[in-house]
Length: 175
Image (cartoon, rainbow, N blue to C red; front, side, top):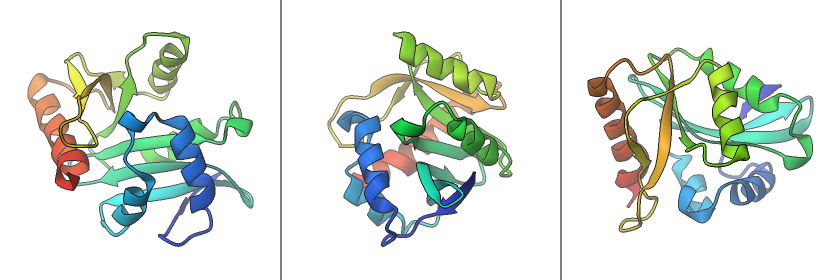
């Protein structure tokens, strides 16, 4: 499986949009048209997860000198359980960065508990500080989540710096 960079007019966008909108509730994602517009930002990357000739999922991530932030990752529901998500995260972890960071729903049910354990098995640790995903639309409420990182975020100062960069560069600059 490989990560395939997707451009604004690539035919993969149809499937990626379907999975994006089905995998994430509206308050945990931006409108898909905005995702396509953001492909013009050099720090934002949308990649298809490609196995042979088949698109099996996608990942959206941001890369800066301070960190690589995974905004969204999803696998075709018909192909889950084949380790595509694990392979994609493993490939991202091989990209040079001081921290690899992502947001994860709090473990309130079986699905969210499994998701947290999935990232823990891949070397991520939940920061022991309160975090909320900033809203995608100005005026909407923030959503309590874990901020997970590899390597682990060592202290509250680093946590504050990373969470502020995410808030400013992924969310607030697009209000």
